[in-house]
Length: 173
Image 1 (cartoon, helix red, strand yellow):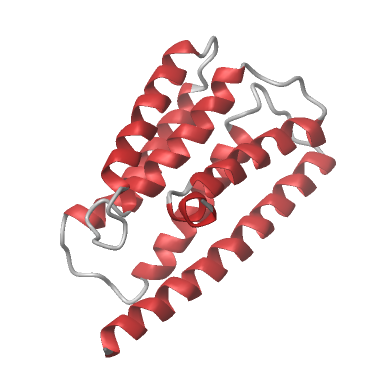
Image 2 (cartoon, rainbow, N blue to C red; image 1 turned 90 degrees about the vertical axis):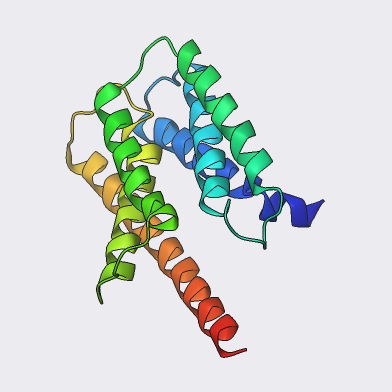
């Protein structure tokens, strides 16, 4: 069961949900509709499973991605308020992140770093900007944003190092 929770990206989707809820608590803003938080969970679940849809290491990725997509679409249709600008930016960023899986192209030397920055940007937008209706920045909110960027950056770098190490190990076998 623990293996499923980690391999299915259920845990990472819960992390996105938790960070979104943390934003509301720390900024002392009212919680949004449950559908917004459901959307954050399912869209993260979809994206992470969709990323692995073409690999043999995750045989259930297609079913889980479809589940995530259905959950995201249903919750999006139920949301009373949709922050379209953030939704558009997150969608475009996610598509740019996922596109190299399906369209082969020549990768530059900085491709991995660009991908890392894009992932950090998407996570900060979905967990900090998306769940808050109207945000007026001040010193405290700026510090929280810096904290969130730092936290997400550290986590993404650790996973990036792990993924690069795994690629090198697989490549040397």
